[in-house]
Length: 150
Image 1 (cartoon, one colour):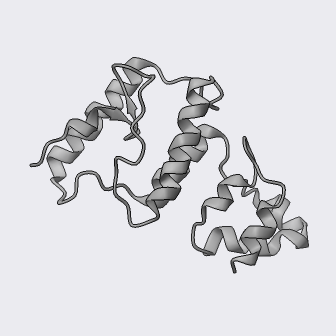
Image 2 (cartoon, one colour):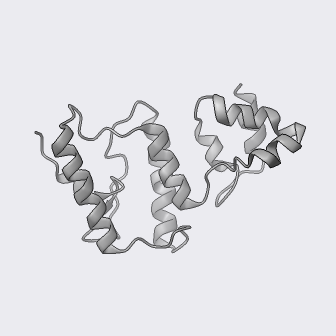
């Protein structure tokens, strides 16, 4: 199996021994790597400013996750070890960042003007603009931009 030094990076971006060092874009995905890089940059900035929804990760937790990832990769031995699932990875970072799209079904279904947005978020492709609907760095026109992509 190839060299797994990158596995020592928490969320494939934060060096656990020195949490001031982030390596953005050190992964491969079927989605758009530049969008992943933007989400990683947002996550790192929020982490350094103590603005993550879950708080700053503890060193022990970061090391446990890295070890879990290393064992998983050794067990399944994928051909591309740096590969991550685009939607899952983006959602994971967005959840910690607090910018995950709000999918409260009752709220969306009560308001008919939100039906298209709800349908788009559930059944449409993932666009990075959906992580700008709410939370930090939200854009006021993100909903209109997202709906224009249909």
